[in-house]
Length: 201
Length: 294
Image (tube, rainbow over all chains, first blue to last red; front, top):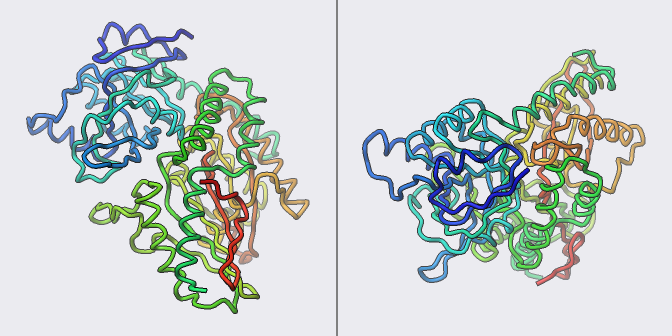
């Protein structure tokens, strides 16, 4: 369990140093994207339209923040992760096309994403679900917002962060996935529980 | 009193309290879980949760960015005046809280995907009414996170399977939910009534404080049994492994049709937000779950 502190843009070589159970802090630029922003980003790529930001080496954050606006200035008030499982639909293409190095979220991701992370060099950093103020404190400024027509939660927020974390490396770029390991363990435990409760499977 | 004005102000206050300050019983359960968790990963997650709760209180900001779908439970005294003004007043309270707390706008039209921007829309906020004797109005708000809502499940088991079937249904639901609903969770479980009734009761059961066991000793025993069983899954805090998968189990029931055995499991995330206030006929208000703190 080593601790790493990376600044964006993060190189593929650096990200490949990370192993599951390591702890990571990210400084620099992170960009939020949930279901709708993923969908639109992939559509932009297919149509050859330029993205509002170059995502190479950055971290994508599955988050729909609460933000407040004072004059022209946005502030992130609360910004914990949303359930990443929903983004499994898009994330392999997203990693491949935009070369993001860190995916920040909660709740884990599946085999398709794990394979893409191994192939293209990226990790999943689990941030504690609901720990919205812990996250917001690490966000030093809101650089900009794109696609606000998608609504506050689904828009693409570009945050400048300092030591954003702790992120538990839960999927690394070597094919390991803690969530899949825990799920296997849980299946085994289920047999014991059923026995205890007198349930036939 | 001017019911609309008072209800709007009380509605705003309980919403603000609910999203910033977790109830004491939830905080106590999380602290206990942190002390007892043996998995290193799990402990790290619980530590972040406890730190975050403190920061939310310090900065008076919502404890989670998902400030939820807003649901009110209203016990209306039959003799209370202007009950027809309550819904409009609570809608105004929600709009104001969305701007001023602020809350995340979480009300989206399912057909055109447009976000209303103020947490209101058809049937939202959702109001559950109960008529009670007297002239007081008691209002509880629950702000229900989406991650834990996505794994709520209702179903029908074969009556012959009985309580064993119920236990299996619950364990399967928790295993299927896995890391998605921000564990440690609280489970509301209800059986009987019908498909809609069981789910409504399951969700309402989440309002019962964690330190209040079921008044029915047999159901209290069942709550305990399910609690221990589910915590053997090893899902752990945030699904990263550990022995804290849930903080509590709350069971309710309705009588069932002889042919049917409806069951429902409502998940709440650790950010189990609720707040209650009681308004007297003269407009004076007692805050029952929180002390006003701003």
